[in-house]
Amino acid sequence: MSSPCPNPPSPQISAIICTHNRDRYLGKSIESLLNQTCAAFEVIVVDNASTDRTREVVEPYLVDPHIRPRIRYVYEPQVGLSVARNTGAKLAQAEILAYLDDDAIASPEWLQILVDAYAEDPKLAIAGGKVTLLWTDGLTAPRWLSAGLAGNLGAYDLGDQVVEIQVPGLTPRGLNYSLRRTFLDQVGGFDLNLGRVGKNLLSNEELHMTNLALQTGWRVAYLPTAIVAHHVAPERVQRRWFLERGWWQGISECYREQLVGEAGLGQLVRGGERLLRGCYKAIKFWRKPAESFENWVYSYGQIGYLSKAVQGWLEASPLGTAQKPPVH
Image (cartoon, rainbow, N blue to C red; front, top):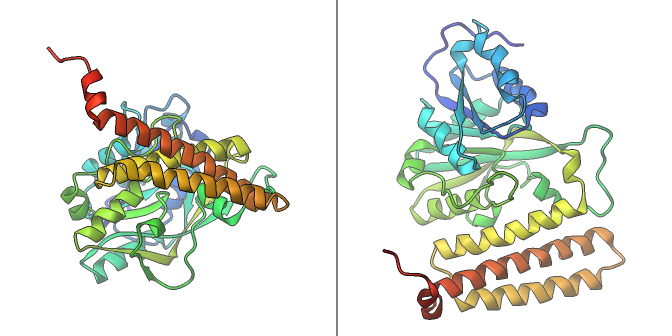
């Protein structure tokens, strides 16, 4: 266990781990932060209503006199990743907020690379880096796992050069993610209707943030040397998990479009076209397991997208409004 100085300087960056029942990996994530080369940082662990040994994992760091000034723990009873992220941001002392997943390991220079990037560009609102996958417990990538679906496990690599993100779809992964507090306050924090809640796999909160940043004159960047490794949990190496992930991805994308005023019948047309295209490709490439399965996941996601679109359309229509009971 590392031994930071008893009285660390005021933090330049706040590293935040939001955790929910992930005690198996949490200790390694914390260790990777305490071993950073950056001198001025703090670590905040947001326990998002965990029912496992999360508190026991964190406790030794809280009572160690050498580490205690560097790390804080808070229990957030309302389940939801966006809720936990906002809680961490409120507690953070620094202007730069860096979010690390509770099953990820940051490279030693991670925080310093982020600090330097924000210092060099005052208009940088969001930054994240490369994500590699950690296959442990004898796991290996199955033959039906495509490079595209590996992204659902967190893999993210835009090359070895800094990239200014101008398309929301290329936004940094949430497990290796940072923001400038000024920007986060400007947009009112993370949207509570996006981001995971318990076992549901809602997502797209980072994509929504990038969209807001680009619309308001901020910049978003991919930093190739800000590397994080992500553990691949055994329960995720199953076809069912990817199908469920695709379903929630579709719902998340539909809701994100509704947030930016793109709701309506056009969503039904777009979703229908994508569903047919995905099914066609899944059948066309049936001899290529990875490519075929990726398209089945995509198609299943479009069903989720369409279900949310229909729900939104009915609620917005005069018929849907008429069916709502009066409020007394």
